[in-house]
Amino acid sequence: MNLLIYAAITAYALGQGMTIPALPLFAYSLGATETTLGLLGTMPSITYAGLAIRFGGLSEKRGRRAFIILGPTLYLLISLAYMISSNLNQILAVRPLEGISFALFWPCAEAYIADLHGNIPRRRATGYYTLAWSVGTTLGPAIGGYLIDRASIGSPFAACTIVMAISLILALISTNEMRSGRELTHDETGGQSTSLRSILFAILGYAFSQATVFSLYPVHASMLGFTEIEIGILLSLIGITRTLIFALFTFVRVPSGATMATFGYFILAMSLILMPILNWFYASAMSFAMMGAGLGLVYISVIGLVMNHQSRGDAAGAFESGIGIGAIAGPLISGIAAEHIGSLAPYFLSSFSAITGIVFAKAATAEGPAKRVRQ
Image (cartoon, rainbow, N blue to C red):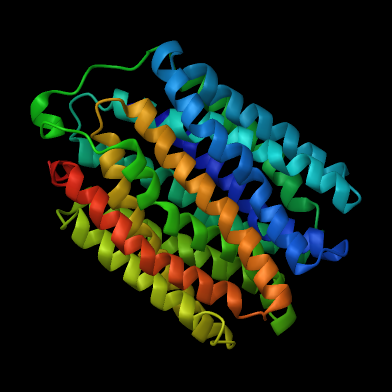
């Protein structure tokens, strides 16, 4: 097992995570309204949703390595651009480039890990991958909030530049020109693969909810009087409980498929109802921990369908495009709702998206061999 590729994934996720609290707070300091914050949250997802499935499919034919290397290279340049931005128009111009970086990196990294697993059970390979990125996104927001509080609003972007350079170096060292890897056997796939459309729809509620909270909650919390460090800690709590779910899945046999997805979306829906109501820091921490657990359960159930798919690049692209589409709708719709209906509207809309996600996730896991991930 090549540990350096997992380290590259962690570094990329860490850099990305540092900007999660920084961008909304930076934009708000420049005069962004709630609708503008929603638009900022949506913009990378527009490019991401359109390109993730395209790059995932291309990696089946041309190999994964070039796409994986281009991802952190582009994000490094994006971080530098944020450092020199001085108005909202400049941030709006740079933001869609993030989606291109995500589309280059994430679906191809997922497929590369699936190709690379060798004799490791596919459930274990999936677990290693999810742990790698989740550790990065867990640490990132807390570090970003700390840097803002102790240094400046631009310091997370400077730190992101350094971390993306590390991710790039690790990716260069650890990847090769391996193409789509070996074909899955009939036994591994259970005789069929889940349709790409079902994979896409199953992850929409996950993405809608997560993107809404990441785009709008930092400013909402700031208005409640939470410090930048407290905001970062709350966002990192999502990652902590999600990482614990991933670790449990990796090292302990647990039920998967429809049961996991249904339970995950239910927990997610409940956490989003509680989130705007609990305005005391420690009470809010409970709802964020619940959200992380729900996200973790949903993600691991759907990513299992991707890793078991006969065309992993296409499946990873559909999965990441679903995340992109959900992340387009979530911040934009919720930002407009917050400005014109009230500050609680985004969380109730996200809870509703999680409830509808139960239906799509059940349908997807019923189609495919999710149970095979438990090998």
